[in-house]
Amino acid sequence: MKSIRIGTRNSPLALWQAREVARHLQNLNYTTEIIPIISTGDQNLTQPLYAMGITGIFTKDLDIALLNKEIDIAVHSLKDVPTQLPDQIKIVSYLQRDFHQDVLVRKQSAQTLDLKDLKIATSSLRRRAFWLKEFPDTEFSDIRGNVQTRLRKLEEQDFDATIFSLAGLKRININISHEEIPGMISAASQGVVAVAGHEENAEINEVLTRINHRETQICVEIERNFLKTLEGGCTAPIGAFAEYEDGKIRFIGRLCSLDGKNCIQTDEIFEYKENKNFGEELAQKILNNGGKAVMEEIKQQMG
Image 1: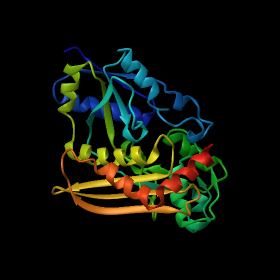
Image 2: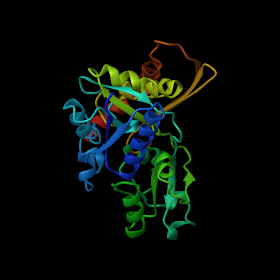
Image 3: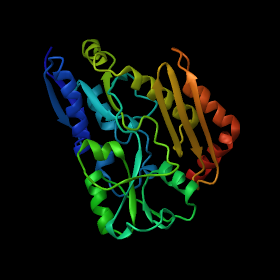
Image 4: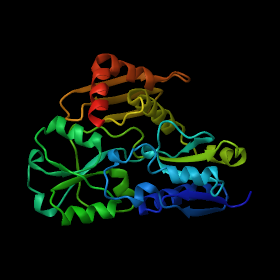
């Protein structure tokens, strides 16, 4: 087999993810080539994601390269990947999840402020709503860019703190003071590196299955099915996290209104069974417990 061409966004974090996939493949004695591609989401750093038609904003350009056979595989942060994939593209492999949490990073001048008094910079509807659930009077501002860009903006601009995925900080060795956030539930599949392939490329897809982490796959498929069932094509504040241990799953999921005032949550432990769509079942419980009304309200507010 010729060298496997790995497509990736060109941010430092995305390149780390691509190198990690390359390392796994090289351990199986395959040669690799990393091909960075600038994504539309990385080019526009002024608009918040929810104003850009968030679905696939960071994956579209890699999808096109994969369909045009300019690359053999595409490496993604799985939480950026829409639950509905383009025709002929599928997720073939999931690396083992490391850090799923969101963490708070403060600027120096805000180190002693109470959480309720912080002005928070985040463009994430989920992070905003879940923060408002705990601290309803918070003032927000938008922030975009990679980890380094957001850290620079944190010190330069008029807000006190911002929120990062812990995986993003750990993977590129940013040693900065951070704290866990009360009441925050991570996005579906946060902290997971996924590898997408072209359905026609059976030989490479078979290789990719050999670097797949099955327990991570089980968990994120539940999380993504939960998200897909709730969303119905609409971006909303949704958190989902599943853990697998000794044949059992613990799942925590939440849907919130945009202002954080109306939140519906589930926290369950159950036996895992193959071929059962737990994510859809758990989402239906949320929808039947007031979630449908919350989603309708969000659709109206998002216009």
